[in-house]
Picture 1 (tube, rainbow, N blue to C red):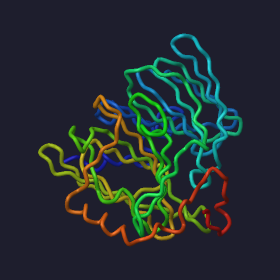
Picture 2 (picture 1 turned 90 degrees about the horizontal axis):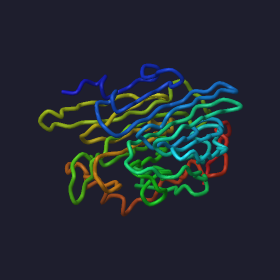
Picture 3 (picture 1 turned 90 degrees about the vertical axis):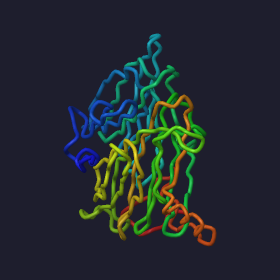
Picture 4 (picture 1 turned 120 degrees about the horizontal axis):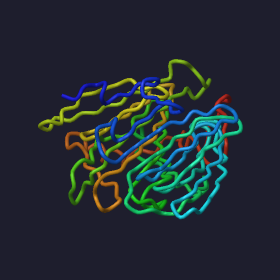
Length: 311
């Protein structure tokens, strides 16, 4: 059985250098997906080589400038307005191709997710405006959640990467019904996945106890996983295979997670298989409304210090 500690990466245990979290294919024991969380002090700068991976620089808190020089010597610079936090706004982002050098700098400091996927094609560096991010409301009732589709096959061109943000209001479940994507087939694609979490109280903001829970399980021969873990800001969960879900937002605490996925299939597509034991739950949604608290964020900055609904 896969040990819980190999699936769950608690905040403060997975960092390296400027990264408070560094999930590489080598560390995860797989071949395609990466996620680094970059911490920059005011005036800080970080330079990295993209190597054989494509990357998206996504502000979690703060704003930054991303400068890129590609293999042909072309220079691009993108200014990201970013956001005060993941519960305040949908953010803009920058795409950086493989075989390039990138520098992230921030005048005021902040935290920035570097989402990576090993890529075959070398595309051009590009800016992704917040206004172009598709905000999807998924599920219904207590399974309602918000999905910010900033780097999906339908919304942004990449070679291999699929990445989204999910925000679940307190008391709701997401990643439900439990699903998997670890086999090639007509209804399923092979994708390694990282979940990176943040949690906060809607009102008043900043409560120290903010948390959620994540379930991951599998019983295939040689692929046993059985994890139900409490998750807090900065924690990560690795999904090499198996069923994953639900991700549960505790009452009073909104839950955010960033999903980064990539895999070996030639087609860049997200196809999933629901756990047959729970797939029937989708039929309940026909008679339920989407949670009226959604969307929790839009491209307009909102305050977490005032009791208000963002609609």
